[in-house]
Length: 290
Image (cartoon, rainbow, N blue to C red; front, side, top):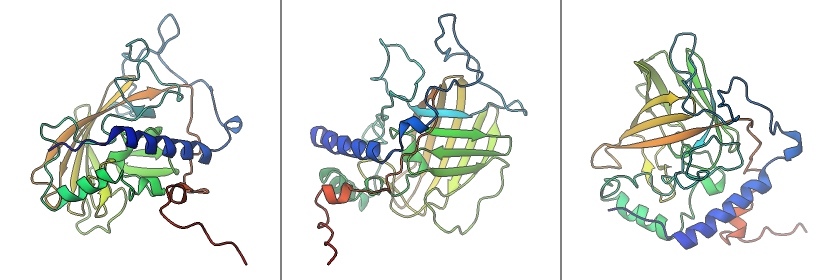
């Protein structure tokens, strides 16, 4: 069963969350706005050549470095796929329902199906994201925030513009911990299969939200990402989730991102003067000092 969000009401909540994010962001005058990105392949008209070859690491493997945002087919210029300048960021279609492309939707276990239904119907009012808690990496791929990848031959780091979050993936194929202390991003080890970076992750926290509907990962989850950069302008992430506590069988989705040029990360600290809970009437107004 595919659980679709109530779009008009969901849009209202998303608009409020976006407004709060903008209010929390730092002043634009102090940021690196419009500073040209180095080594960008361009066509004769000056536009970014998204289909140019992907850059390479010293080892010869594809370099994932860059700033990335979700691909949304509805946010194109005259139907053409173009590079982002950081001012046209849209969420992925997978933001609300990461299993939107799966026939029948995600294969929820019986206990999880009513939980997701309730979270969808109450507009995800308990969502950790709108309460300014960290976003798991799967969810971050679809949210309307920039992600900066810093890639070397031994390490791939993701810097999340939202709340200055980070994730590190060790690319030396090290063994994953057998009894990890659960964490927001889990523990990730990667190896190369040709030009595809294969990342295995374990050790995420129970009830880790991965979409707006309230689908989750549990501590039993094992996530495999197959990440490729087919050209300069795009990253493709094939994700397989094997979580027998939450789902009746493993499932796979493909998430896509496009490059951002001539822009940089900007402080977007939701935790500073966070007002969402109060504005939505979830808690009483703070008592005045006597």
